[in-house]
Length: 166
Image 1 (cartoon, rainbow, N blue to C red):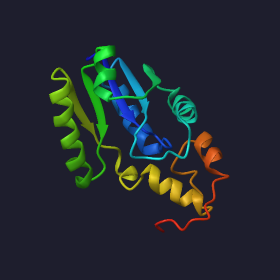
Image 2: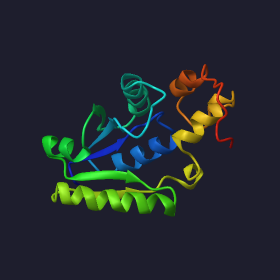
Image 3: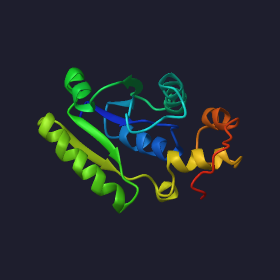
Image 4: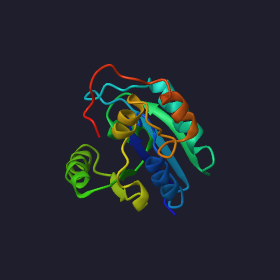
C-alpha cells in the first residue's frame, strides 16, 4: 500500500462528497492529508482556521487521515513533505478538463508526483461547496449535504445579494 497521499482543496465548506472521497482514499493509503489551501481566485466564506476545524471534525473517524493547511503551490507542499501522490475528486466530465490541465502542470513542476482521480458515490455527483453556500444563503436546509458542524456554521448565512439561483 502506498504510504501517503494529499487531498487538496479550499473546502469552503467541506461537503459529504469530499468526505466520501476522503473515505475512499483512506482505504488506499496509510496516510491521507486533507490539505486546506488558499485559492487566490476564490473569496472563501469561511476562514482557513474554520475550514481546518470543519475538515478535522468531519474526518476524525477515518484512520490515517490528518488535516493541514497551506498557503502556496500544492507541489511545493508535496515536495517539502515528500509526497508523491495527489488525490483529486471528479464529479463530471467538465471537472476532468480542468483537472487534466492541473495534473500536467503539476508534473512539469514536480515530475515525481502522480495524480489519482477518485469519483464520489453517485449520490454526491451533483454536490459542490458553491451549491451548498447558495442553498444556505437563501435559508435552505443543507443538513443532508454537509457534516453537522458545517450545517451549524452555515445556519446564520444569509445574503442580501441575489445569487445565481439554483
